[in-house]
Image (cartoon, rainbow, N blue to C red; front, top):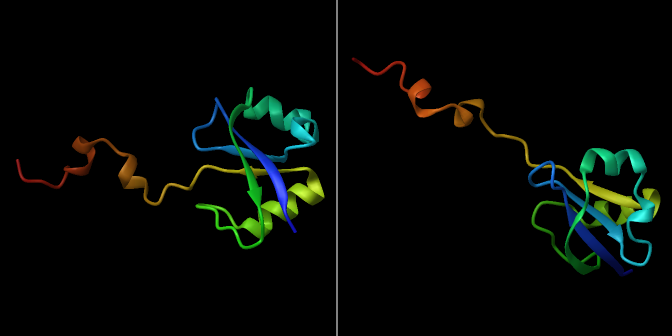
Amino acid sequence: MKLLVSIYKSPVKEEMYLYVEKRKGLDAAPEALLKVFGKPVPVMDMLLTPERKLAREDTAKVMDNIQTQGYHLQMPPAREDYLQTLPEEFLSFNDPV
């Protein structure tokens, strides 16, 4: 099976992407989702096949979501460690004065 998709990025949330079938376009995405997502910014069109690898998503899951619900929403990656987001001065509180 092959599926030609269009990928859009969110102008509101960094690293959030919306995949839709190219021939159906954004009409398949719910209006409520698009309000939260913001005005979709086109990134690329891509031919998906079960054999194609995606960097951060399971291709089979993406294809299944597009076929069953009309879209696939790729969420930003989770932060690995809370301490990585703290400014440097907070990380050195145990340092001798």
